[in-house]
Image 1 (spheres, rainbow, N blue to C red):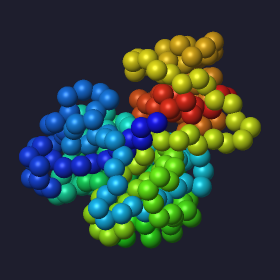
Image 2: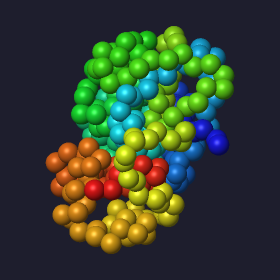
Image 3: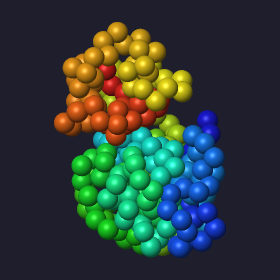
Length: 237
């Protein structure tokens, strides 16, 4: 199985700052070529640490948030505007910016409701460990990478999230089948995988089962649910 990672990579001119807001390089979704996009996993020259969430639910929501950002044409790369994603989120509706570390910070914040602080790749591992949400491992060739794993270089450099990896599971949980279609509607996607009750009331129960608190049917909440469904990791209520 091919492993994919998502990250904020570089701006439209191949530079770290000074470009136009939003992703000028995105050609479509899923995005594998944009400023913020997915790509096949590779071994970084500086080596990788793995920050693996203790909770499978949080790991999967980190992956879902990263996929949302990668497919959002409004989010581009610029170190000068790196905190834009913190203000507007991975579902940003206006053109904004991030860098690799601020994007990972926002994915964790959306997934766990915890802000690890304004880290960079030099202190990311230590600040994520301080949240008590993660275990740290040193990557070696051939190790299994799980969906939702956070990768950060062993010296200051780059960070990414595993968007497609080995499945994280919780014993005793019941999940919907993986949705492989193209709809952007959570109602249509749920119906496509056999859910007969797609009402708001039942969707709120599904959201609660997946630790999506205070469900109001917002676009961001529905996108998180849809991304989990596409990963085959949306729990049934």
